[in-house]
Image 1 (cartoon, helix red, strand yellow):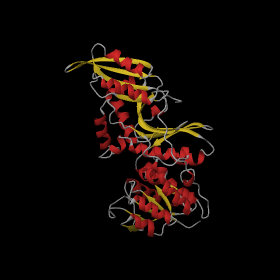
Image 2: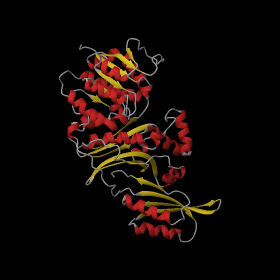
Image 3: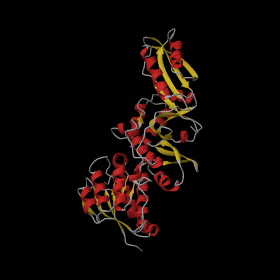
Amino acid sequence: MADALRIGIAGLGTVGASLARILTSRHNKLADICGRPIDIVAVSARDPGKDRGVDLSGAQFYDDPVALARDAEIDVFVELIGGEGDPALSSVRSALERGCHAVTANKALLARHGVELAGIAEERGVLLNFEAAVAGGIPVIKAMRESLTGNSISRVFGILNGTCNYILTEMERAGLSFEDCLKEAQRLGYAEADPTFDVEGNDTAHKLALLTSIAFGTRIAPDDIYLEGISNISIEDIRAADDLGFRIKLLGVAQRTDSGIEQRVHPTMVPKNSVIAQVDGVTNAVAIDADVLGELMMSGPGAGGDATASAVMGDIADIAKSRPGHQHGPVLGRPAAHLDPYVRARMRSHEGGYFIRLTVEDKTGVFASLARHMSDNGISLESIVQRSTQNGNGDKKTVILVTHATMEASVRQAVDSISSDGYLLDKPQVIRIERPGN
């Protein structure tokens, strides 16, 4: 049997502790599978004395993760610290520059510095694996980099954040507000004390940026993503979607167009009978449209210590099975130096149409004005639903418009024109609609 693969782990939080338990409790089985033992020889954490349910007394402790990456006698540096800057960045960079393989679950780090780090890894002839950075335990990175070689990908999309999916699922199931479902998600540990990064779509955007780079061979572009979170989704939207035969999901979508690559993260109405609509709770799902294979969809646990640790373990096992002198594939599916510049496409015509909810004064002329603004912007309506309710200061009406295919700019211009007329009582709501095959 080959010499042991020596591992250094920086970060012993939920994921790091779970990984350490897998490596120690299944040591002999992993050795048989990988053809060599995998030993934890160094660790770094904020609290060295904390009980993590695993014996790490045989590992050398480092206060500084950068020192671990630079000085420890390890073959693989595992970064589970988090954050797009230091110490995560300096530690991964240090490991790669000294010719040490690296594994990370850090999507924020890779979204900002992935091309640079990929270039260093390829120059030094080492691996930078990051399966756990996107969609938790779903092996989507491996599928795109390896299994789909030879395919041309036209679109990749999915549910990439378990916190948001849980909240939207519970809003529909329990009939509760966004705020109430968020509190429950925090109580259960699905949402952070400060949930902004998740619910405003940033987490999904980082993951989408990585998928986009691998799918289309472009440089990572996290700042070129149309971004909209779920904090403005009301129970009225959930109920209206249900009445129309839809469910609301936060989707990340990247697709190739004639003018470039379109990346967007936003709440989306999907038909109840579609596969993506059946993905509930903290589960993630990723769909890939490819010319040879067709559509591939994978779903599974998208977050949590065990799911993420499972993906990290898979990355480590791949390194353990590789041999010295073996030519490794490019980190992002194409050599970093050969990645195309990212060209952002204009938001295109959308076959699914749009859901527009307006709360207006219930008076003569309002409906005619709405129809005029839609017509002036070339928008054809599929359906119109009106609901009258009593307001404390008089009558109000909820008008729900569902459009046919139209341009994003046309919808936004129409809504802005309606807002300027002065009869709206609440902020208008606009949600894209996605249908199977679109």
